[in-house]
Length: 227
Image 1 (cartoon, rainbow, N blue to C red):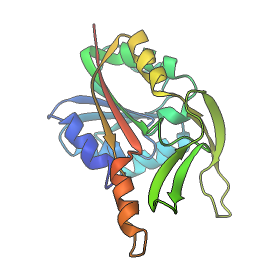
Image 2: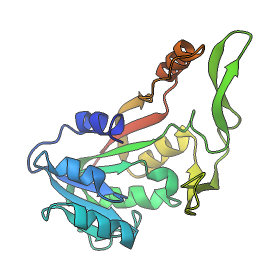
Image 3: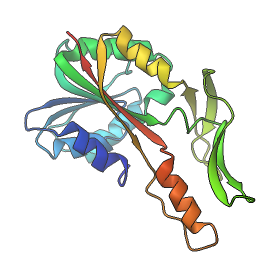
């Protein structure tokens, strides 16, 4: 979040004072607080009562938070926001058609929606991983499936006694593109972002660092409402 997503999302948004921003599925409000520091007028929404309580406790009073599901923003008026962000959340939401329908409703004319997701072509739950070709001394990304949509339960704290799970939905890129088009959004920009991690010294260090720079793990899509 801090080293890859934040600097890139701030560059993409290029927020101005008084921009009205809706941070959907905002969690504890990390990005909402960063957006507010630019002078933008920020609203955050998340389905979790506990996460919104944390967001309110950690945020300045000018940020407004709602306990709302991203696909049912009942208490938010139509045409209220210039920009809507959905950062690392769509892959955990079942009804993305409902999400984009609500984005269409609450956005102003020509409003923007900016989405960041785990890259659907290279970061597929339980179906992608790094591999090492010892003969060629090359690190590669293994992908076992891509076009089939599915969901899977993910342990949010692997290796610890704390048990907390979430559903992760894998969808190919065409699903996101077609769903945006269905709800009157046109894609205006797309970027693929790489990991910031650097390998420690060792026989594979150079190759591991090279492959990380070639294979992106995050995808950003910016779309504009056509109406």
